[in-house]
Amino acid sequence: MWDILLQTLPFFALIGLGYGSGRTGFFSSEATAYLTKFVFYFALSAMLVRFSANLSIGDLISWPFMGAYLSGTVVVYLLVTAVAMVRRLSVAEAAVEAQTGVIGNVGFLGIPMLVMLLGEGAIGPVMMVLVVDLIVFSSLIVILITGSRDGRVSWRVLNTVALGLVKNPMIVSITLGITITALGLPLPAPVNSFLTILGAAATPGALFAIGASLASKSAERIAVAGWLSLSKLVLHPAAVAFAAYGLFHIPAYPASVMVAAASLPVAGNVFILAQHYGVAPMRVSASILISTALSVFTVSAVIAWVQV
Image 1 (cartoon, rainbow, N blue to C red):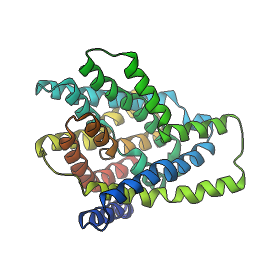
Image 2: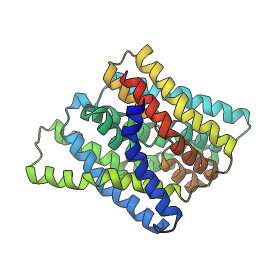
Image 3: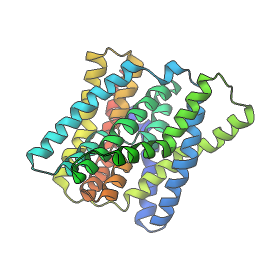
Image 4: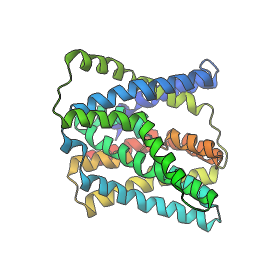
């Protein structure tokens, strides 16, 4: 595990650098917002297009793989929801807590780190995890919150969900890459070089942006945030590992990538959704802060375990 910890430290050091810059005011919240927008819409999108365009359809679409990840994630999602309901929370709050307990920072942290640590073969599995998170769970939280407020699920809600997916640059980038692959179109050398150069900015930019955004997070509601961090860092990878290895018998390498992706800390976009709908943003904020700090050790431990 020590070797893995040393390999992951540079990634978390970049997060720490961003955090320090944000806390000292050297990097303002406005600068963080623009850096995040650059990474999200340009650098990470270029990386995803290049990755997916250079893979086969079989590498990007595996129904048993996605079924295993979805099954393990749903179990933890329902567990966190049940705990929220026992505490007599509203449906909207339960949906936000469940989202916090299972959605990791796959886009900004997982893709660059896991590909570098586990090899380029990790690209396909990580992208499948990202697609399930975006299509299934990002849609589910919108449906649950809006439906609970309106008292029903209307076409307006479904239209909002569909529009959100169509406008998401990660979904668009992966779809574009898959289309290029399916049509058998090779990327021209200048285009590939352009995507490589732009995509290279995704890793340092994303990690720095994660840290800078954490500087504005507060550690309130510690008990709840601790439970949600435990769910994300421990229960989620454990459930996914059981589904991958024990139920669906996924081959060792993609299964290891799936479990490593499930061990990532809470994603920042959960806070964006919580803040947008005005539902429990402080406990999500604390969960992101705590889970990211603890993930220095937990992610290293999970990666070391799956490699063995």
